[in-house]
Length: 171
Image (cartoon, rainbow, N blue to C red; front, side, top):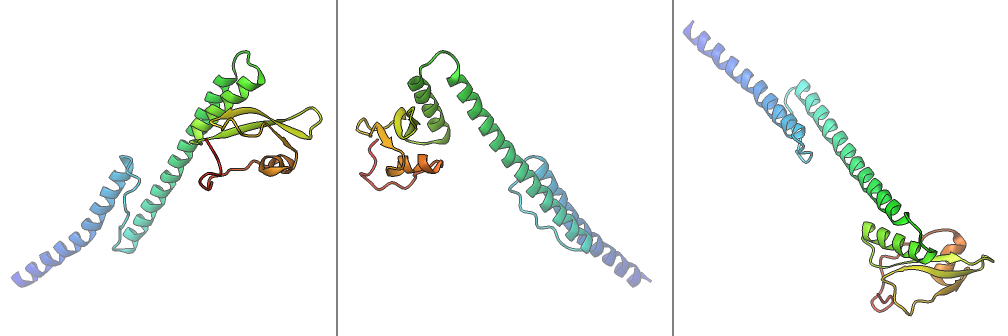
């Protein structure tokens, strides 16, 4: 009888620990996620139910990561729009407006140089209208289709140049 009682108590202790350990781990993971730690590793296993709980916690963490990323992106875009709105307020000529917009965009996206060309009245020539950290020797005009600037205008596509060979672009 005593042996059966000891065996039963030992079995109850082992079963309780095998359940409470993973549950406590799951609770700790949930607490970390609730406190904003979305880098928490979710490694909850054990019984089928605990494995399902671990998968649900992983899904929740990943969903919160995605929403946080979307929220940061939205805030960044909204902040950029607000800054552009501020630059466009008031009476400015086209060069002042273009320079202000370029400076604002460059600072917001971390660009080191930028140029803004507008088509002339006949639509065949592009004239440098705004500049940000552009070398004074930069051509002030391009024909539509000539060079990278003219081709980008002809294709109606913007170009991002982020790999420039040394000496090819003076700032």
